[in-house]
Length: 155
Image 1: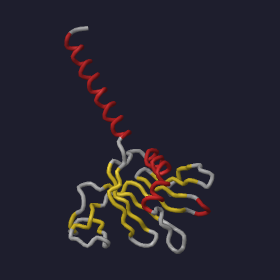
Image 2: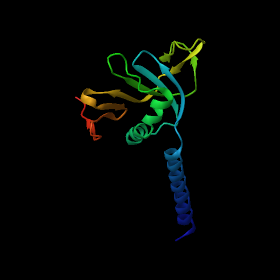
Image 3: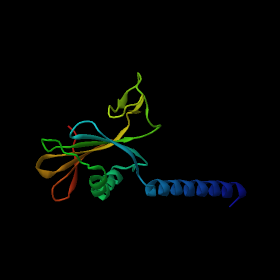
Image 4: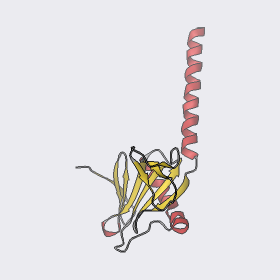
């Protein structure tokens, strides 16, 4: 193998190792809950950092942390009719002032900087007959009462 080919191989090996290291770091970093806002009796907004990237990772995170969310944040908060809807938003650059841009503002904060840029990454809601619905960028999934998760076909 000549010197040029060795250099190319070394560069490719370093790039591969870097990509693998970055992927590993992304997969093990801890989700941080910044705040929870109750928009109405059954609509909750959770502001997060370091949320899992994949659909499978987001659903797995929910399943692993739903008891913690219930105990610490009283989520899900079912309204008088028993339903709930939770949206997880990336916190991004933090709270901002309301502006002409499409932002979500929280009236429970009595400050000028009470809005975030809308970047929803995951939502969870109750479904029919005890099922739970997960809505993600790549699709919608339903977890049946027995724990089986199926992807719902879009129409």
